[in-house]
Length: 449
Image (cartoon, rainbow, N blue to C red; front, side, top):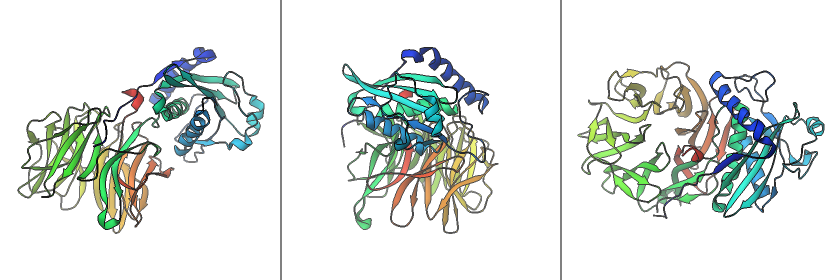
């Protein structure tokens, strides 16, 4: 087991001339998130049009510390990956090395098609590293955001993700998703001898770190709502599976339930105090609830059907799951106590791995039809089903904390790799990992915890 994983909290505050503008801008962003769309005369991006085109934005090379250029490059890569922005090639920038203290030549930037500009610098502040940056509206010829974030130097890449999150939020009204991490099953070695271990990466695939040794079979890792714990299934040599919970700060692991009962497919409740999971006993597979701190496993379904893959609604009142109780693999919803079971999927094929969106508006799923696998979404009442991406083998969706992006794994024949799509089906991009990767789980925003 590697040393415990630590979370870093950033410092954020308004700086310089931005003080009078940044806070109103961020409050306006919150209002847009609730009302939807853009207000007249306000620099923002409406994500709803069918003929949507990414916003041209210029990320000027940052000045200052040795990591400054890399920070600006990571910001540009983050925004590009979202599918919402189209960073302008630096070779076309009319102003190079533009200080964040200087006002851009808006006419020159408008001539190259820029609608927004980000300028900034990276500085050392005692024992911490900080990024100072400004977001400029080219059309209105004014600054709209100016902020500063500070982190421990060892986590300097987070400076870029924090800045990208704020630009994304200010432009769309949705919270960002870049300052997050992904835990997944890393696979290395020849196919017949591959070792599977838990590993973690940043949202862009950087900072790979193994969480387990690979000497034991650990599968389906799932982050807790605070991102401080991970639940997973440990498969023993006797094929008896056990759900365990890992504390990322201490490295301690705890078994959930009794050793004589197989448990698997865990998912945390919204408050992080409980786990919904599957229990196999006597040839039957039912859903159950267990405390993260131990104690009895309480079944909430019964019968001869295979009930598995539970996922809580954001308010904790309902659970979505997959079951073959109707004769085929379909998606069902019930109360968190097991009451009021109702089927919500009725399309062709087999439905599996349902996951409730953090916003509560969609349920993501895997659908198998013939030899093809698709990742899709539907509303909690089963309406509005949409397929976002299809392929030879797509599986295991997990939501970004803003509820707008889904990560999953795809195997085109060589081995599984991670990919990301958005709820509109406009984005379908790979997330780099050192080896094969499957079963991803997206953390909450690190800066929110």
